[in-house]
View 1 (cartoon, rainbow, N blue to C red):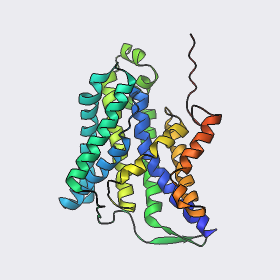
View 2 (cartoon, rainbow, N blue to C red; view 1 turned 45 degrees about the vertical axis):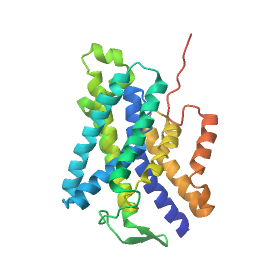
View 3 (spheres, helix red, strand yellow; view 1 turned 120 degrees about the vertical axis):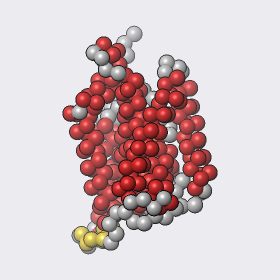
Length: 290
């Protein structure tokens, strides 16, 4: 029983961080229709940006995080305006290849400046553990779940009630109709990339504190793809459910079976679910009539 509780906690914490990273992926896809293969690298850039301000420049963590958010927003806007906006209307394969190239450039830049070795930083999340059902639960994992839940709730409130959030939802639903009522589609595109970078930064900081700030964070970011496909490419609630399912699946396999299959398990589960629901658990079924 204690092992089950422990693996569940680890799965929920991994799933919550995956949901943050996947949220950015879904935001970009809903608003712009672009499948962003660089989402894992945005996770990496966010973690190293905060690490730079916090450890190298010796700034207080709050200040380092705020500056990291500024850098993330700027990076998202620059990528959208200078890299992807000129490709609007081009072949989707061309856009996908550009995001793959962007991923290589971002990871290469991190490796150039910081190397390939994991970088340690002072603990941000609470250390120690608590007892529950005979299991010792690390407080940093519990804190990661709480922080991720608060951030996801804040994003949900933003999209549901704020003017910019409603505008983004309108653009995602129908760009032409949005233009007719005065909504700036280009601004919505830039905001989607900025928010995607911010959500990835938060996920990267949490993951970097639990494990280490390392280029290997991109491997964790690869699990974003089964998360968003499982939950539905255009579903924000689906990213949360998909993240938790993938996180739990990975940790249950690692704990109760063979760790060498832990990375493969989420993809096998994804295949089985897609055989029943091709658009994911919460994806919208698209019917094209000719």
